[in-house]
Image (cartoon, rainbow, N blue to C red):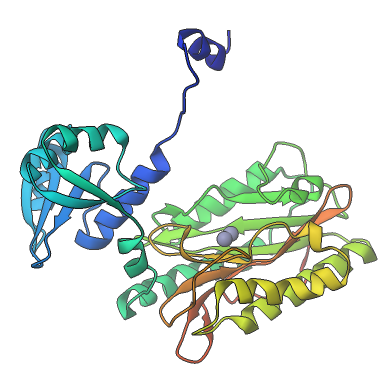
Length: 353
Ligand code: ZN
Ligand code: ZN
């Protein structure tokens, strides 16, 4: 029996299996507020500016050293300790991050807990100078790794081999790790926006999309380049040129006061004019910081308006099953009068061996 079948055999009703991204999201907020890197910590910030940091024994020595917060050590069931501390009071909680089991613990302690959302995220969306300096370094390391990658042989190696080469290069360059699962997507694999690298040798005459980022000093980078393996068809060259035109239009649009949905719309114009609008099915970009996906977002349904200090990706793509896929992505910091690219590796179509 498969794992799913074994699980299903235990169930009387449908089971929602969800969790870690939300909890990690909450931990990113804790880290942002306190600097504590942890998998089990919480912060209660009072209106008067005082704050309590809750964590268990494993994080105690580091948590105690954090200034401007009062450390409260809890048992491993963190939220039971938080509930005890807040008993009988009215509080707001981040609805995207508090697990239901934690909410129940608060309720049991007589806490009047009111949902709210996006408050810390809205602060995180505007980077300060120190954060921007770190992200510039993360972008520069991405540039170095892409430049070195362009000298590597692609043909006859597998996508997964090149993924490992990239991940290792980030670590050798001083990164803490990769900011997401590195994508190397050749030929047909690259016609899926969320491609999964495989074990087949890469052929010549295809496009290869490489989407990779590192974590440096706790902050993520994100960059995509598409390479040609050997000589490619005129049609694939055209698709590349079209994607680049869309990407440059998107970059040009990024600036303070610009609505996320408007920047997105500008990038669609050339691709739609070529009759390929349906092949660009995702948004133009997303905020990047402690997490690889954060506020603000550049998509048709976005209500965000860019402001100086935002760091966003600009990454249109064209995905045509049976033909090929292209995506080109840069990381950009919004400045007072436009955008500063944090990834600057060439966007000329490079041919690799
Ligand atoms: Zn990316
Ligand atoms: Zn991205």
